[in-house]
Structures are given as C-alpha cells and as structure tokens.
Image (cartoon, rainbow, N blue to C red; front, side, top):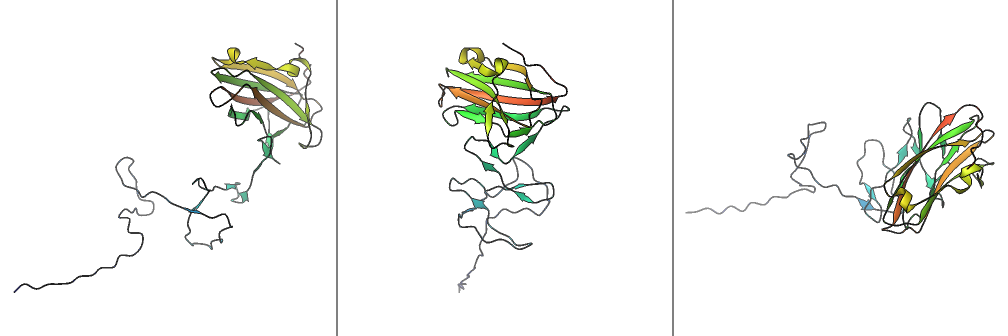
Length: 225
C-alpha cells in the first residue's frame, strides 16, 4: 500500500542561489552575480558600528551615495557653488606637471558656462594655459577668460590685458577641434581661475572644453593682440 509523506521546508531570506567566497576568483562573462540594491533614505540613516553590515544608500534617482576620503581615510565633503566650481577648494599648480582646470566640460543648455576651482599661483611669474575646444552643430561662440581674486576666492576680477580681454572662438573655428597654448602673466597675483562661457548653446548645439595649466618662473610681459 502506498505511503504518503508530507514534507515542509522553510527557506530563510536572501536565497538568491548565487554566492562567492570572499577573495575567490571571478570570471567575467561566465560566473553569475546578483544585482545590488539599496535604500532611499534622506533622514540621515543610523551609523554602523565596526564590523556591522548595512544597506547601501541611494539618491531619489537611484544613484549610489559616495563619500570622498583623504589619504588617511577621513571623510571629506565638497560643495558645488552657483558657478559650478568647487567652493573652498584650491588647485595646486607646479612647473613640473600640468593641472587640469576644466575637464571635458560640455557647454550646452545646462550648463552654459563653467568656472574652474581656484588655483594658487603665489610666487609664479606666469601660467601656460592649454585649451582644447570642440563644437557640435552650430552654437554661436565660446569665450575663455581669466579671473584674479584679491581675497582668496571670494571676489573675482576679469583679467583684460592683451588678447585675454576678448578671447572668443566661433563654432566654425572649433568644428574640427582646436588646441591653443597661451601665456597668462600672474606676477603679484595669489589666486586665479579660468572660465568658459558658451552662447547660442543648447542640447544639440554645444561646445566641449578642456583647459590645463602649468606654472612658469620669472616675469612674463603681457602679449598684446
């Protein structure tokens, strides 16, 4: 006579069916993985204690929150100002290498302009400014300008000597991409930043701008147009 057996099993949470041992090898395109999720929590989630597990925090647009840390592991924050630069941040410039001031910023309808973080140029005679600009379709023009500060980055003054007074390129000039190297005198100046301002730009008509700088010793005369 047949015997009927009733069997009941209880499964715990997290039965995804895929797991990897800590530090085990992973083969791209072959090994399976589990998608990562997170929580949206804007009311300051509780802090974790050492060796506690916790859920990843997300923004309302599902992006993962990230925190900048210095070399000692301390958390550091960065505030983006209305000019789209980093408030309270000062770039370091040397004569040994190039410092990127504007890194592949697209001037379309948001933003239409961009200013680099402040750069300490105390004791230098001039700065080499390397500019790359490319345009798509037919924006009107883009201006590159230098600004000096007399109070460590609170107030900015346009530098308007020589060709720096009106440094513009139209879209016909930049359609194939241009690269320019220009000298900017900074003797007696402590703080500098570089700006890029586009006109006639939108989501389909735009400029892509990159600017780098390198310090120069000695006093350099102003080059007049």
